[in-house]
Image (cartoon, rainbow, N blue to C red):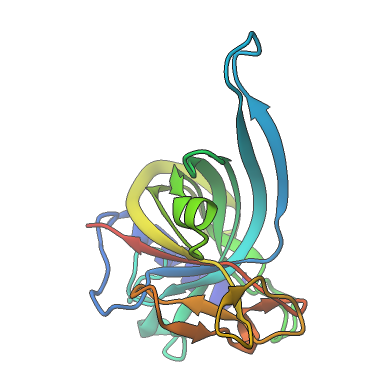
Length: 238
């Protein structure tokens, strides 16, 4: 067991003793995740006996991003032993099923807080989980689905279910729940006439700010294989 693994294992254990820690109120999201890819299907939902059918949009997506130092998934005590760290890497997989009529639907998934595994090079993507769990809640994509506004929201609970022990093996623990809310920002491009259009790999892409009018340029590290990604900003409640 390397020093860095032992350090983060200890921090993961300490985290469970303080499950109610909230945001640092800095305006920075607790966790920012990006959809690396997405698989979408459409299916009818109804009684099938002369009743109305609703088309459901179901999606599954792997996500990758960072938890801000000093938030529940990246405790500030980390600075004591690893002063150079300013965030913790988070991976996740999410599933949702959203009505194309209301834009609402359930969401669930799994997540890991990960570090670089022993034997990896320093530039390898972090891949060794030290904290694992699940999340569930409700997603609201009505601004995008019903009105063409590239925003959405989510609310629910992150639940920590396992942490790494002294050997680095994930073991079950008494669950710790973290209520959260979040904002989806969908990428878009701007046409020569100034209207929003769907983006691709050849156009400059943007996110829409909360004021519903300011475009936020999407940076190079917010792309996946050249494609601009959907961004999810999560904030934990106290």
